[in-house]
Length: 342
Image (cartoon, rainbow, N blue to C red; front, side, top):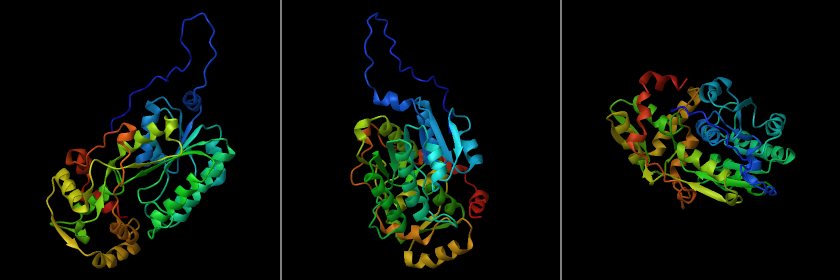
């Protein structure tokens, strides 16, 4: 990842040389910039890119992380404040939000693990942050939800994000919700998983359900740009923004592009989802870090495409899901793919 250049903090003071005193006009964005913006999940994929863009745009950033080692590697070279904290903990979040002007809430899990459940990390933590923001006087709240998130969804992950989204929208905060489709970029939790499975599947690569599930993969750089634009534009308050890539693609089409990027060749064979469920369930029980869970396998029945892509509305031309954008996948080796499971 290209390291951002050093920046000079923007000077918001009136530099006019006129000798006539003019009353300073209110500037909500300037006032917001005077305080830190809190970013949860700051050491994650979207969090890292968002922090880079915020810092380079002159914002004061307070990054909330749980893994200080990862945070040091990904954020240590940036001019920002790094704090450890658990988004589920009221005391941690009250302290994190003290004196802040805004919050960008990105922390969430796609796969449940021991001690981390959807209800706790995706839903209850959002309530903690809403209440903490209100208590600390932080009224600007940008929440990254998920395309398809719905409190009535039959899929537990989407339901947990939907309930959290409803909490945000029903609060007294100046909220904006971003709903991205599947996000791709270095160290993402979807495309990199597919690439690692390619490395672990010689000659033949199984496609669940024949690879007909549809996605609209959006680049992490575009998502981070959207977050910054939303934060800097008061007209986005009280609105939802869907974020998708340049085109809707089937899982087969995505896999074909991944193979080209990796300079790999595999025979793509469609496998019924029902036939894969026992295998995925066994891997889920046996592996500390299973690449796929039965819950995520079930999500293939849901078309993860946006009804209305709002990125152009924010002045962002979506990055195509093209092999030249996926060359980072060539760093994956058989050994690293195997180690990722344990």
